[in-house]
Image (tube, rainbow, N blue to C red):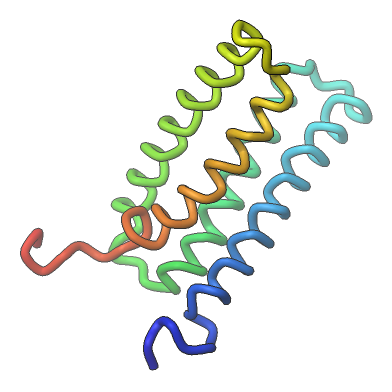
Length: 139
């Protein structure tokens, strides 16, 4: 079966799972933030950090299983590349969101634009770089 044919590993199936995992990550992030801060009374910055980190772990584990299966030999390599991508996404997000008001764009619109763009490039990078096996020549 080629990757263009229907099936659990087709680009369309992977994209659907990727989007569902992303939606779940957002629900975990926002839901846990609400529970920790509004219900449990945890200080906002700490609650924000905890919720974000929990959603990142969920996102990594689910996307890794989706893109790489249950293979375990590459876990550290995948985690390292995922972390690099998270840092790059953070830098881009902060740069765009903080620069947007200076050029007349509301920061929330800029944030949504970065989320949309990063959703696209993350899907491609997950499949082609983050969750890949090393090439035979790189071993």
